[in-house]
Image 1 (cartoon, helix red, strand yellow):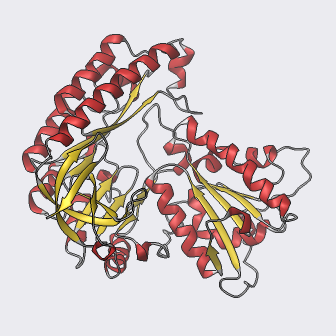
Image 2 (image 1 turned 30 degrees about the vertical axis):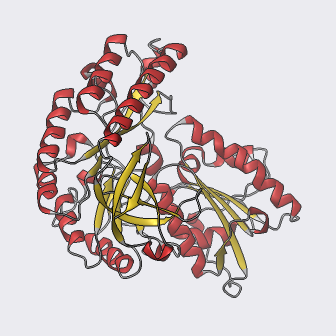
Length: 466
C-alpha cells in the first residue's frame, strides 16, 4: 500500500467479527465475474454466504450496497477488464454519496494485494480466493477501514465453503469444486501464485453437495479444480479422482458428469476405464495440450511429450469412440520457431480437436517464462499474431466439418433453457457438449429429449425434436 496513504488497513489477523445484520433482503450485492469456472464457483459461494447475511443479489449495479468484481489474471486481457469495471463502480459509489462498498476478489486481488488500494483510493476491500469463506466479516470491517486479505491458509486451516449458491437451485447444470490450488510449475502459468498449493476437498463434502444439487433441478454436475486428475493423492485414505467419478455417478438424479481441468501427465488408466464403465460420464473432455512441439513442451515444463499426449487421446477414444476433445493452445511462446508451430498445426490436423481455446503467449508476473524473454527469445508480435490466425482458421474448418457429421443424426439433449436470441427456441447440449438450438416449449427445460440435428454451424447446431 502507498506509505503516504493515511488510511489504516484491517486484515484477517485482527479476528474481526461481523456486526449485527439488517433484516434479510434489505441489502443488495452486485457481483461481476471474469475468468474461469473456479471464479464462477467462488462467486456462487460469495452469493450464498452473503445471502445468509441478508444480501439479495441484484443485476443493477446502481442499486447495490456491495459491488464485487471477481477477477482473473491468467492472461492480460481479463486483468484489463478490471480497471474499466472499477471506473463504473466508483461512479456508482460517488452517486450514492459513498454508501456502497466496492471489493476486488479473485486472482488479480491475490496478485496485486495492497497495490490495488494504493492505486484506487475509493476501493474498500481486496481479497484472494482463500479468503472467500470470510466475506461477511471482511465486508463489515471494510466499512471502518480498507481491508486486504491475500493470505494463503495452511491446509489444516483451510475450509471449503459448503453453502449452496442460491441461483444453483434453478439450473440444470452446476459446478462443484473438488480442489483448490495447483502444485505444477508450468513456466507460463500464474495460477500457483494466485491460488496457492493444491488442496483436495474431502470427498464426503463433495458428495453431500452433489446430493443437495441433484435433489433439486440439477441434472449435470461439473467437477472443477486446477488439476482434477491429482485429486486426493496427497491425502491418505482419500478417494482417487477415478473413484470420485464412480461415487458421483452413484448419486440418484445425476444424469451427466463433466470435469475440468485435466493435466495430461496425471491422467491414469483408471480414468480411461471410467469412460468404459460410466454412462453418466459425458463424451466430452477438455485436455489442454498447449503445444504440439516437444521442444516447446519442455520449455513450458508440461512433463509429457507429443507422443504421450497422442497415446492418451487414442486410449480415451478407444474407450469412448464418440469422445469430443477440446484443448488449450498457446502460440508464440518464447523461442517458438516456425517448425515448432507447424508441429502444433499437424497435431490439430491429426487429433481433430472439436474446439480449442487458443491465445498468444501473455507474459505473467513472477512466472519463470520471463527468463526466456530476458534472453531475448520473444516471438515478434506480428509473427505470433499470424500464427494465431492460421491456427484459428484451421480450427474453424475442423470444427465445422465435425459438426456437419452430426447432421441428420438424433441425439439425447439435456435442455438448459430458452435461447437468448430467438423466441420459442430452446437450447441444450449433447453429451459431447455441442449446443443445439431447437423449437420447443419451456416445460422441456431440465429434461433429456431426442433431437435431430438439421443444420451445423461452426459453434452450434440447429435441430428439431423427434
